[in-house]
Image (cartoon, rainbow, N blue to C red; front, side, top):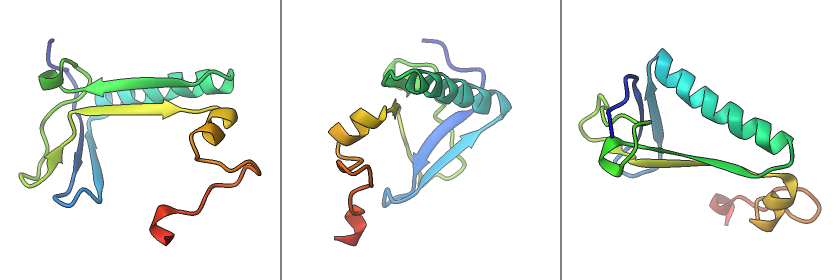
Length: 106
C-alpha cells in the first residue's frame, strides 16, 4: 500500500498506560471523517467500526512516526460505535443503563 500523505500516529508510553495521538490537519481530518461516519451509523441504529493501520500492517491510514523513541507505535486501531443494545450486550452498560464498576476500582 502507499504511505499516507498525512500524519496520524497512535502510540503508547513504555508501560502502555497512556495513548498519544500525533496528527497534522489532514490526519485530524481523516480521524474526524472516520468518527463522523461511525457516529452517523450509530445514530441510525447500526453498530459500525473502522480500521486504521500502518503501511507495515497493510493499511495507509496511520503513520509510523512519533517524536519519542521510547514510544510504542500502534500498528492497528479499531474504533467501534455501539448502539445502546450492543453496549449492554458487550458489558459496557448494565440492564439499568448504568456503566458497570470501573475495573480500576476492583
